[in-house]
Image (tube, rainbow over all chains, first blue to last red):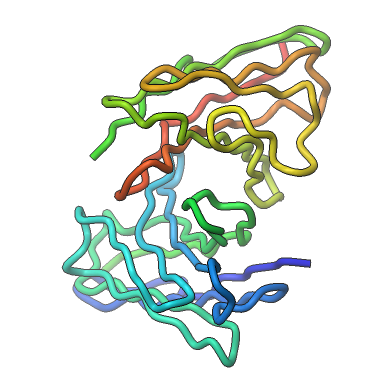
Length: 119
Length: 107
């Protein structure tokens, strides 16, 4: 059974760095074709893809935020991470991690974690 | 970036009816389009990918069609559990992009 769960700070101040963790089970990031992606959704708005990381450590970023994003993984502990630097109120959203098998569709999602950026 | 335009943004229908949701891409994405269902308290569910391939577990009343820039999600004979928000997503190229969503409500 594949599950994913996001965790994060809940609230942070503008200019800080947001660190998110995705802890998953039911698959391994050392397996060919496996990956983890991050997607966010501001309240009442649509979905925005942020980044993917693959089993071979290949990484893809949304260019609209590329300079601020860093995605990484800890294969041994079944975790993936996303850091967003220099946050502002526009980064307030629910952040999801999801599994993209080959082809970048997301077949399993986490429940999401709400992040608020406020001074 | 490929812009995904989804319509309508809101749709009201009754159980038993059939509905269609449109998703248009700003350039050709071949058949690389996925549809997701979002419901409160549940994780997002992948329904269809590659335009028309049903994900395992998706009921057969759901169908997807289209290629190039124009795609459609059709739900035949709506069940009560189908009332939700639906998103399209192109998986042809990076950056991956989503439509703005369609909220399907009970009439």
